[in-house]
Image (cartoon, rainbow, N blue to C red; front, side, top):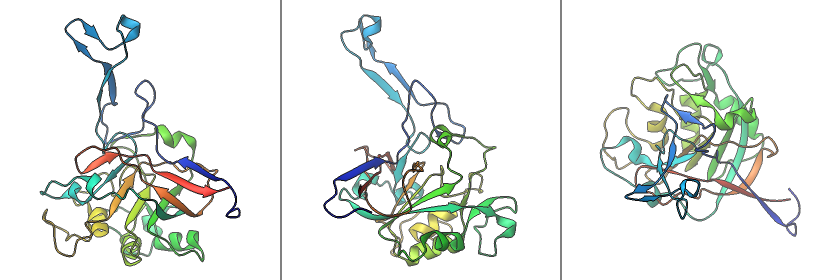
Length: 260
């Protein structure tokens, strides 16, 4: 990092949701769409004779691009992510982690993990952190990190890495309230509905959909980010920048700030 008198720079680590091009999407869902509004003789497309461009957007925050979610994601109680997501800047740490196969990992795994799965271990996290102490938010960049990740489709045949239970419990012990990751989910896609990683992070019991006294209701999970390779591992300031939607998840534009 440069000195304190250097101008500040910022970089978005969100994936752009391009309604006219390739999109990053999850769970085999259809692409998000943007279609001209049509009411009576009005059409919201200047190319079709309309006076202005006005599109109606159809998308799912959990499955289309970068989003931030709250504990309401797995509860019966309806909760809005925007009531939890901090608007102030957070102290954040970027780490680059390479996965290994579950069969080679000696740590405690989530219950749905199969031997051929790729997992992100606590040992790998600690190696990536070195002497750095993680801060309010932990931003995990998985290696390799090709730019094609920005528009990657994740269907039921897609293999992506996820954290070991040991790593998740350590993250909670470090009082890290916000986790950001470049995979589409903190959990394995096919996990029998357990959502164990989410439950460990939010400190919820293995079963049940009720808010408990010990739950980390202030914590957030941001998925499907993309951290450019030009960004070095280290400490930054972070703004999550949620879209003011109601619901347990909302599109977000997490942005890093640093001195150049």
